[in-house]
Image 1 (tube, rainbow, N blue to C red):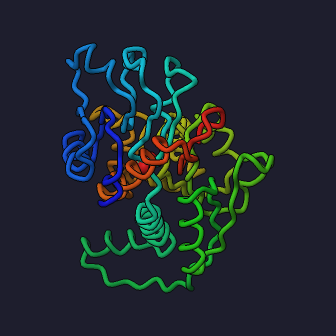
Image 2 (image 1 turned 135 degrees about the vertical axis):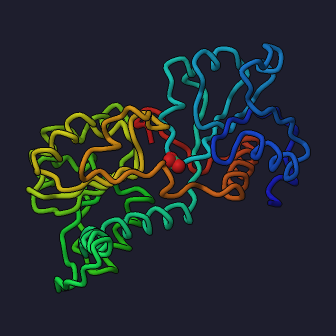
Length: 308
Ligand code: OXD
């Protein structure tokens, strides 16, 4: 990453998950020797925190923001920034995020695989193989209707790929003012790619499931907080939904006692649909830092009032 060459000194706090804080800090130190980089640790002392001017973090631990009075710019190593919009983050701190085109591509591939697996009934043949059963159930090419919730980079990449696969794709976003319950009917697949904000939290609830076509499939690659999980479990039990592909859950890691593990129709993955790569995170952070230091507009800045 060459973007770090002309930077002025700055003190940076880093808190990652995958890549880890240590991986992010090491990559930043190599790319931008002018920076003083502190990986987050629970026992960082007040003087260190008070020196932090910019931060690369995916979440803000409770009580940390007030201990960083010099913090002016906060960038997320992820597309989702909801864990940074904590009440004690001063309104003057500006916020950016990482938007990796390869992450959108990876998520679109994950969603396409998940949708086609259901649309082409591949699970049936996995079950048949166990029985050494060679029965054929011919079907026409899948042209099912898909509703994609969210029209950001991720939602658009998903829609384009599913459309190229022959599915009939519609989009929905809150901003257009159409009620979700009006958009849901007719779709066999509902794919959630919304940002998590106070307006979208719990949007996929009993009322939404009741508005979906009987037998619909939910695919969630956004945030677990969009789904009222108890309502989803009830909708699957009633047969209103036939399946729910959940790459994200309200509580991550998903606790062993969660009923989602064993609910028929739930297909779980541990938040792996795709992530921003280390080089994109570091490159976009340094690009943003240069813009901030030079007083230019911040790339990928988040509108804090909107929440994305
Ligand atoms: C993201 C994620 O928000 O990885 O980028 O979930």
